[in-house]
Structure formats: structure tokens, C-alpha cells
Amino acid sequence: MDTVENNQAAAAKTARVPVAHPMLAMMGMLIGGFVGMFSETSLNIALPQLMAQLGVSTATVQWLVTGYMLMIGIVLPLSSLITKWFTTRQVILFALADFAVGAAISALAPGFGVLLVGRMIQGIATGLILPLMFTVAMQIFPPYKLGAAMGIVGLVIMFAPAVGPTLAGLILGIASWRWIFWLFIPFLAIAFIFAVTSLKNIAHVTRPKVDFISILLSMVGFGSLVVGVSLASDYGWASAAVIGSIVLGIVVLAWYTHRQLTMEHPILNLRAFSIPGFRVGTGLVMVNFGIILSAMYLLPMYIQKGLLVPVALTGIIMFPGGIMNAIVSAISGRMYDQVGARKPAILGFIISMVGALMLALTSAQSTIAYVIAAHVILMIGAPMAMSPSQTHGLNSLTGPVAADGSAIMNTLQQVVGAISTAIATSLLGIGQAAYMANGATNKAADAFTNGAHYGFYFTFVLALVGCLLAFRLPKKEKYSTKEN
Image (tube, rainbow, N blue to C red; front, side, top):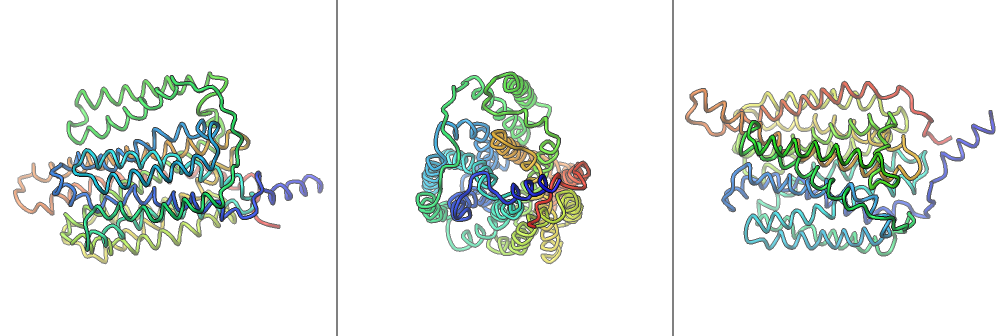
């Protein structure tokens, strides 16, 4: 028995791929991931301004958010295959260069169409960086440090969307929205230098046969699903275009799933879902990301168009929540090391429910202090649940399937984020229409606030679902990750 325990203790202190300086090796990906996630939500605060300057509607401008996430969702399922054809360094260096090109195109865009193309090019890069960030961390850090390491990765993922609106608001207060994209490039250059000097290859290049049918099914399936939900803002949920796109997406994804499960060498090993810990962890991450993306999409617009606050001040209002997000993200990884995933996940979703409900009870006359408090509470709950749930899910996998697990989790996370943003946009429009249908002919701020309420209730429902699902987490992890 002592020999078994000693072997387990030794295994917990040994990384799967030993690296002399693992954090330095991660730095290029962490910076690139931060920029990617910053880009995902930084434009939220600029959407009202972009609608006015580019002459587009709310339903159209949302594509700058959903289109970006759609590209991430299309690329992510291919990440495992890509890493078998190209080295870790090659993929990351290409992604960082690709992101810089997309940022430059967006900054120079003469109109909405070119801006959207630039955003989607950036989405390709983020779709390459995100899964590798998790996969590399799982390989180069020993198990007893894994919670803390994943907490740092979670800090990047959670902190960037939280501070994105703040920094973007300050930029918009003194300059054009184009400078949001110019800001990305120096950070990407620093990340590129780190990747060149410190990043090592952690996987073998085997160059397996490429199943182009699976690639096509993945692109059509995820794309149709996101497009269908997004079109609901313009055409309504009962329209033929919306129903047809959603049904097509579901049917094609079912075909894609069947194909992956029956292939000897699938592009994405969906057999990972046969492991209960991974299923629950992935479900919790998806729900949590939906909470964050729906709230962070609605909140900056509500502050500007509901409370009638200037854009620069909007960024400042959202800053305390961003700081709290960073603090809790860093702590939550260590919470997993100490108590596992169940307790922080349940508590995090309960706190998220309180924050979402507070936002749903706002009005056009709410105080800034109240909005800040609600945002801070939400930003305590969401990251508290995120990192432990993610670590639990990925830690349930071993061997080659671990890379597929990271790709699966991040793919569904982005797709759910895009769908949640689209649903929030649709509910925003429904709420505004309902307010005006009751005979109100003035106070556009009140109408917008009513629409935001519909969206925040959706955020609350997601938090409730997450809380109920978190009870399926085990009371104790399979093995202790504490250092002896």
C-alpha cells in the first residue's frame, strides 16, 4: 500500500512533459490568449458608437461579436488535427501573426463589411491559441500545481473580457474606435518574441489522414446553428430562415457526431464525453461562459443607452468588476487544489444568480453605485465557478484524448457564447418592443432598460442551471492535488 501511495505522490509531482521554466514557456500563449479574449468583448462598449457611425442596426452590429466567436467555434474543433500536422511553435507563431493582420484590417476598415472580415480573421487566431493554451498547461505543469496553473490561465480568460470594456471606454473617450485594434499589435509583437524564444514543442507531428467531410460538417453545423440564432434578432424566432438554419445545424452536427464516434481516427475524439467528470465540467464551463458573454454584452449598452452615461465613464464604471474578476480568477484555481470543484462551483453560481437578478431589477434611474455593486457580485460568482469546473473536466482525461477534451470544451464554450449573445440581442429587442407596445411613446432609455431586463433574466436562468448542474460534481476529487 505504501508503495502505491508513494508512486501516486511521485506522479503528482511530475509533469507529463517536463519543462525547465513552464510559466515562461506559457507566456507567449497567455499574452496571445489575453488579446484574443480582450478582442472578444472590447467592442461591446463601442457598439452604440459603431451603429451610429457605420449606419447599422443592433441586430447587424452584433455580428462583430457573434462573427468573431463563430470563427473561433469553427477553428477550435480542428485544433487537435492541426497540432498533429504542425508543431506547437508553428501554430502559435502563425496565430499571433494572423491576429496582427486581422487587427490591422479592422483598424483600417472603411465600412462594416471589411471590419467584420478583420474580426473574423482575428477569430481564427484565437481559435488556434485557446485550446493550445490549456493543452500545453496540462502537459508541462505537475498535477499538484495544476489547479494554480489553470487558475492563471483562467485569469487570462476571465480578466480580459472584464477589463476589455474599461480599456475600450477610455480609448473611445480620447480617440476613435480604430485605436482599439491598433492597441492589440504591440502586445502581439511581445507575445511573438516570447513564443520564438521560450516555447517548446510538446507533441509529436504525425500528420494523419485528413477527413475533409468531417471538416465540412463541423463548419456547416456550428455555423448554421450560430447563424440561425443570430438571425432571430432580425426575423423573429418563428421565421423560416431561423428555424431552417437551426434545424440544419442540429442535423449536420448529429451527422458529424456519428462520424467522429465511428471513425478509427476522428478529427475530434468525442468519446471524451463517455467520462462523467468531463461531461459535467464541460457543461458547467459552457453555462458559465454564457453567463459572462450575455451580461458583458448587455451591460455596457444598458449603461450608455439606459442610464445615458458617456462612453468613457462607462468603462470606468465597469472597472471595479474587472478587478474583482482578476482577483477571484487567481484565487479560484487554488481553491480547486484545496477543496476540489464542487464547493466553489456551487457557491459561484449562487453568487452569479444574485448579481444577475440585481441587474435585472435595474431601471433608467438606478444609481451608478448599484450597477457597480451588481457587476462586482456577478464578477465574483462567475470566475469562482469557472476555473475549478474547467480543471475538474480536463483533469478527468488522460492520454491523447486530453488534447481533444480541451478543444471540445473550448469549442462548445465559444459556440454557446455566440448563441448566448445572439439570444440576449433578441431578448433585448423583444423587451423594447413589449415596452413600446404598452403605449409608451417616449423615454427611449426606459424602453432600452426594459429590453436589457429580458436579457439579464436570461443570464439569471443560466446561473440557475449552472448551480443545479454543479451538484453533480463529486464531493471529493479522485486524488489530492496538494503537495506533500
